[in-house]
Image (cartoon, rainbow, N blue to C red; front, side, top):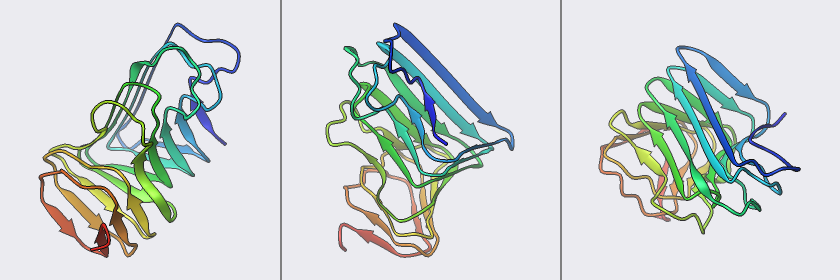
Length: 193
């Protein structure tokens, strides 16, 4: 099923804080969607949510989503922080950031992200997300292992290296600003080039 962190159809909480830490060969598996926040609900006025995966695996049957497109709380204070560290493996259909909180970071620092299926927005944020770009490749780097055709529909930034493996096409539909090395072992398309 779905795993919603901070979902309330009835009451707006003043403050909600969630810290999920998956480490040391542990495995967390979610059958469908793993969502911080939830669509069509009254969220916490101040939401602080952190997910850290280091040396472990996270498998999500569908999407890993930060926020929701229909948050009707009166405040957008708080943050979402995702950290995928050394030797972590994250398998998802898509990783999406919504315009739900003003401060969001998704850091890849030695992680591998695997595609579960074809997707035209494998890594993305909605058009109105405010603040700085949320997707950062840290010194440990990022490996995208896709056996399906997927699109990185947002900018990846940072000084870490990016490695592409797998037989599926990896397409970048946004300009990329990461400055680390780029190792290609499989088909890649930069904006139709």
